[in-house]
Length: 266
Image 1: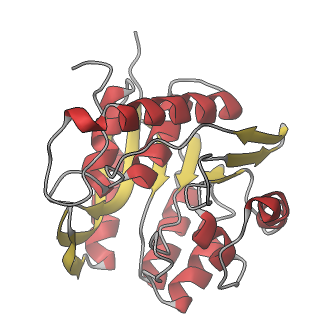
Image 2: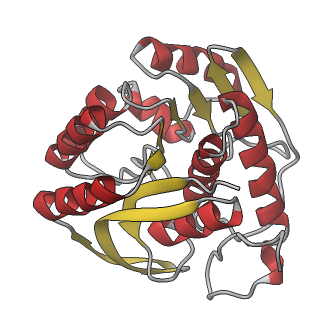
């Protein structure tokens, strides 16, 4: 049995529910060996983010080179990158030494709609990383921001927005509909295979910390294990729904807890 090596490029969450820590748990849960490149150090927990320390472009590059010089990376996931110069460096290096799959989780806007990075970083991600990725996984806010809009799109807007993102270079787009109103939680995948709605009832839980990180990492792991892209997305989503349903088995923190990444094991 061959276990693929995968890479996450993202920030660190010391409470373990999001960022690098969530990515590595997801990789392990879904049968992939995880490596990491840390782009930012955060002081955060389930209640919120207290402080962020950016990692220098030079040291991010050194981490990436060290991993790519040694490991056979089958798939890479890119999370939050706040510095346009870091974005350009990552795009340049990954174009030169590209893994088979690149997944972009464009962490640009919080669930509240508040911007997490400045306009220059948003433009740089849209220009350099969106065309590089095999699939991008924005939430409703991020999908709009990548198109230069500052509005919350609705379900009826999702197909047009996804097609526009593809027209701007994205090879495949998964728009996550978690912010939609109502009892349904509908996502839309648009790829060369066409448009596919992925629908499920909303799971009533406050344990939503790191769901976006975990979803994109799950797609990365499934792609690395040889699944075609549409199937990888479907299986990743089913795994995340299971992790959300089982999250109440955990008792982590005083705020929004994490999903149960290892729900299939313990």
